Image 1: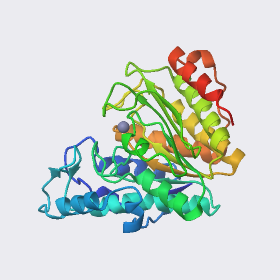
Image 2: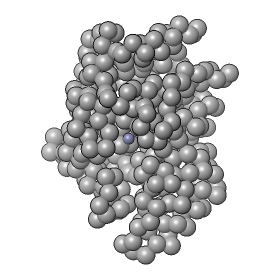
Image 3: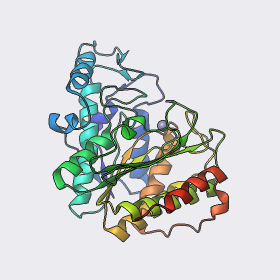
Image 4: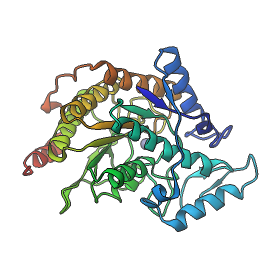
Length: 334
Ligand SMILES: [Zn+2]
């Protein structure tokens, strides 16, 4: 699988003590290299038109000015929320959003899936507000670009520990969103949602107690959710908000889920994409133990590339309220 990467991604908050450290992507690149899995592809920058499909002009300008007026080496929070930025952060964020666009372009050209190893992450960024370590909503910018250019349906799949409030905010117009996340937890949104728009887009939000879920339960939940969502929507593209902070031991998230879930997600995404002929682009969201993050990314893409068979699942492993939500979704008319 191609890895969309640029050393510029390490220039956001370089040398700053912060959970969303530049070491994260550096560690993933080092691990992929050691496994012979680093097959790089250079990203583009997201153009103004692409950013404007998701974000307001006022917010884009504000983010640019607030970064560029900082002195070299100094950092500040964006005035819209809890996103620490430095002088080069805007430039990096534009290339992060562009990186996911590059990944989906590559996949949509029929060349295979791609993993955009970008930072800062994106799924908390709302149209007029950066927050939660995010400046631009990378997955949403790329998904909207795909929908605008092709007129085809796109599904964003988000398994990060946190709810992608920014992504959920822009569902519609051919863009659907399916998320599991801890709730209650940051950013406070992400209550149960099971909604279809008049145009047929879906917004499915599955809260999981922050006390966690079994590994088998998590895998079964995703196997069911993904197969149901893809059968219903028949999307032409899938953008994966791949956040690994749900893994057991993550210093920020941690739903107690074992690393083998990373293989299962790769296998499941491959299965549904092949069945429907959908293009798949992964983009990095959270995951704050750099060593674990490298292993998790490698396992997902290796399972995807090698066509590993998705594991057997057991509905009884899924907590009853979530099982009820999945059953309700399964009963939706095609
Ligand atoms: Zn997260």
